[in-house]
Image 1: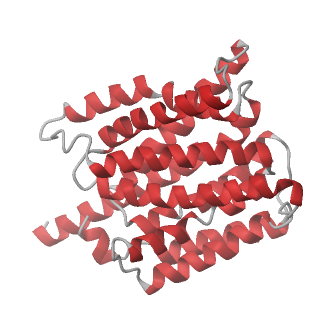
Image 2 (image 1 turned 180 degrees about the vertical axis):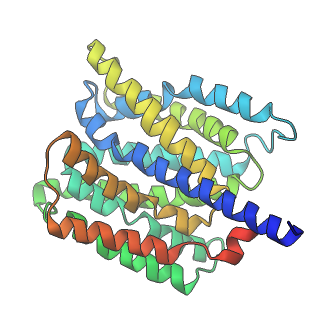
Amino acid sequence: MSPLSEVSSQGRSTFLISMLALLGAALAMSISPSLVRFADVGPLSSAFWRVFLAVPVLWIWMRAEESQPGQCKGKSWSLPILLTGLFFAGDLLLWHLAIMKTSIANATFFATMAPIWVVIFGWLVLKQRVSHSTLVGLGLCLVGGTTLISQSLGLDAARAVGDALAIGTGVFFGLYFLAVGAARKDTGAARVTFEMSLITIAILLVAALVVEGNIMPHSAKGWGVLLALALVSHAGGQGLLSVALGRLPTVFSSLVIFLEAVAAAGFAWVLQNEPVSVLQAIGGAIILGGIWIARPRTEETQAL
């Protein structure tokens, strides 16, 4: 095998692994709205436990990753990592409140605006250029996301606060993607996820104690829900997302939130017997088409 062919093969392999990580992150995060609703603590408390209970797993992952031959520690507590923790805390605070104050459909719809903020802030702050194919793919994903939840979406004055919180969620999630992408240039996925989680925990703990007071679950079932939220949605979802963001373009990776919407509809169909309409299926297909169009091209994967 020639050196060029070997590089090409390695690039395709890395791209495939990164895509699988991105898909896994979407699946892991898509179940979080239902788990937040099932938790027997307040939304800010569930946000705290979601991160706190995942810390032991993240620490073990970090130690295992950095014990591998040739794997260095990287920059610890860098500015991008600090910003990642800050932005993720803002994302979770607003997201968990939005889930409780508006419909899941509305919260999901407004949160799916995150990739737009990735493009805007990436261009204004980081001077990042976005390819034409990525913009076309993003546009299709927005159309597909709107189609996917249009039957459940409804504007109601009583839900205005929740809708506003969901919009804020999208802004913070967009900033989070950019910060993780910057942090992953110098630090491994495990350390980025572990250190940003510690920052997030400190912020969420203060917020939960000030606003809700009692943060303790009231039952074994409540603990089980929070543990699932921590291990699946945080350790699994954010961990896999950190892996992908170190290997794929940030804007493309941010489209994971649209995969999350597709997966959420699938979970509702399988677990809650909520039928998927033809319109929703079309929306999901448009999203998949948009992601395919926005995918990194061959020359990009070879450079990974």
